[in-house]
Image: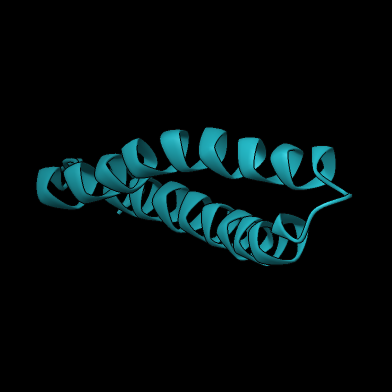
Length: 75
């Protein structure tokens, strides 16, 4: 019974997604904290939406990266 091999191109694409997620996770967490440390200034209204959209993008890219890696390994 032949066994399937890992699709290396798909695996590399999934790892690229995950490599992009790690710095984005740190950056958006920092922006979120920065927004709430500056409650008295107007920067809260600028940085907070950017941080929320960035966190949503980070979660989406994380799931997409994990799904791509799983498809590469188990297909």
